Length: 94
Ligand SMILES: [Zn+2]
Image 1 (cartoon, rainbow, N blue to C red):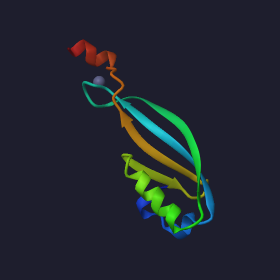
Image 2: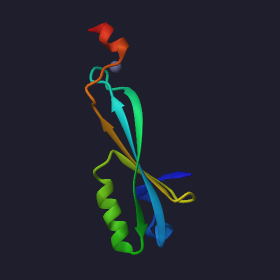
Image 3: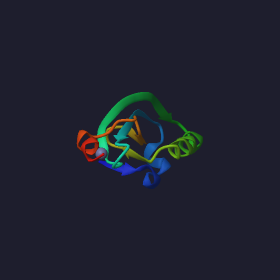
Image 4: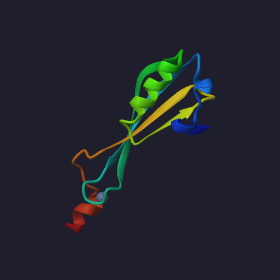
């Protein structure tokens, strides 16, 4: 089960290694809605002390939101991007 990072306590993540995935939603320049989603696996993070946890919280601020799957040892950073692309249906409206 995924939980928002903000509600996950240090004690739940302590002494665990997490696989980190960056999920980027690519948005249409015209309507701001999703074109597609890209997933990228990043470096794993090991939480050995409170400093590692605080660093993770700081790093998470750069993203739209961050989720943690405690059971499967996974962290998901969610991001968005405007790749300069437009939905075919939005082009028709121009
Ligand atoms: Zn669109």
